[in-house]
Image (cartoon, rainbow, N blue to C red; front, top):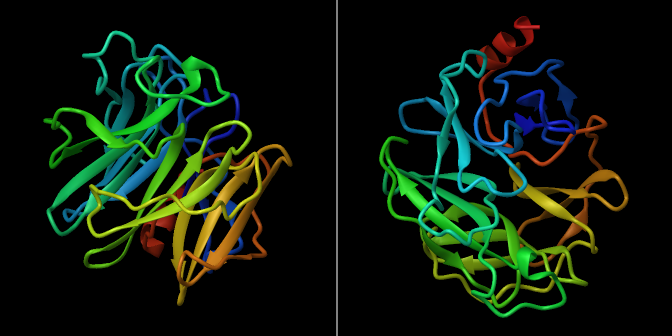
Length: 277
C-alpha cells in the first residue's frame, strides 16, 4: 500500500496498491477529509503498531501550523476524528512543520515521528531564504496521547527535509533524506545503529536535482526508493541492495500521485478499501 494525495491537497487521503512493489493502481476514492490545522493533507505517513492499529500523520499546512494532523484506523476505511498535534508550539519563531514521517520502533515498542521545521537564524544557511532553512526534529510516543518533548533530530550542516527511517537489521538503520539546499535539492542517505541517531555523514546524492519525498519498500532482496522528480513531473524509483550503489527501476505510478509512504497490508484490508468505492 502507498499513501497518497492529489493537489491541491484538500480532498483527503488516497491509497495506491501493488502486488509486486513496481506497478501501482489507485484505489479510486478519498478517505478522511482534513479538518485540522490549515485543513489540507499533504505527505500522509502510515505506520502500524504491535496492536495492528494503523496510525496516520500528515502535513496540515504550508506555514503557520506548528504541528501536524493525526488519526488512526483498524481497517483504513473508518477513521478516528482528526486531531492536531502541536509539536512545535513552544517556539514562537517556528515557520512550519513539514512532512511528518512515522516509524514504528519495534525494539522499544514506540513510534518515532520525524519532521522538518524552519526556525530563522537558528542555523547557518546556504543560498536558500532564511525561512526555508530546515532541520529535522522528532518526538516519540507509545499511545499518541502523550508525546516526549520535541528535540532536534538531525543537523547535517545543510537544510534538510523529507526523512525516512529504514531498519535493515538490529542496530543497522538507514536515514533517507532530502538535501534541500540550493542548488542541490536531491536525495541522500546516512547510516546509524539506532533509529534516534546519531547518524553518520550524509552521502553524495543518488538522485538528480529537483527530487524529493522519498518512500522506501523492501521487495525481495532489493530496496526500492520511490521519489517525486517534481521538475520532470514524474514519480521515479531507484533500486539498491546496500544503499551505496543505485540503479534506476522501471515502475508505474498513477498520474497525480504525490508524496506518501509505503507500508504492508493484507488482502482483506485491500478488499475492504476497494469495496468502499
